[in-house]
Picture 1 (spheres, rainbow, N blue to C red):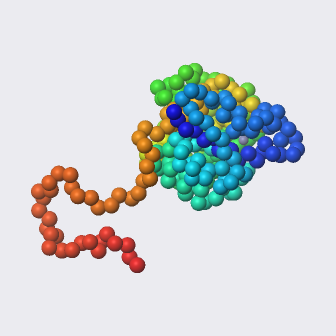
Picture 2: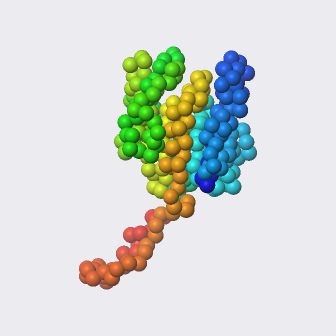
Picture 3: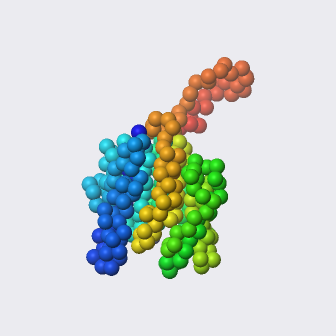
Length: 262
Ligand code: ZN
């Protein structure tokens, strides 16, 4: 069983104007509630969490029992506590999977894990997007055709400032001419991270069959292989094999080199 937590800032859903009406029409239970139902499967235990919940939805007893965390944020990135970002980062380093959706590219946790600005180009004119699967052998691409169309989308375009170690699984072309690395997989310490761009809030993109399938595949791919453990900086260890090399500094105490200066 994979313990999945879908975190959503749940801000646009509360909008009292037309945007809120559109969103509630597409996602009556919020993006998080919709994804929970859409992704339901026998091998997944899925919870949802939102920014307005106590401890921003991720107290220790939730985060520390999460194998894969999904993250949807947009308008409230700055409201996420830095201390929570620290805790999520440590959990990812220990092996928790992290799936960052759409506008989560600017979330604190994604930028923290990437170490880059994660800036991109965007345009919202409801244009068509064609998502190309460029690594059909990747586990996240299982069952996905060579390309599929999202009829109306928000364009996200290059240059996308992410590190070059990302493994590109999907690339998108947009009607207006831009291209984008729309599905990219990373490894950070013991944790796997997948960024997936489709998911603009005012179009029913999470209703799309292949979009759901990609997220479902990503959850299985990102699930930890080993037990998740806190990753501390490793300290001095004894050698496993006997060291025969003669130490020319054997008579000198070098321990002060390894102490932080006061
Ligand atoms: Zn958007």
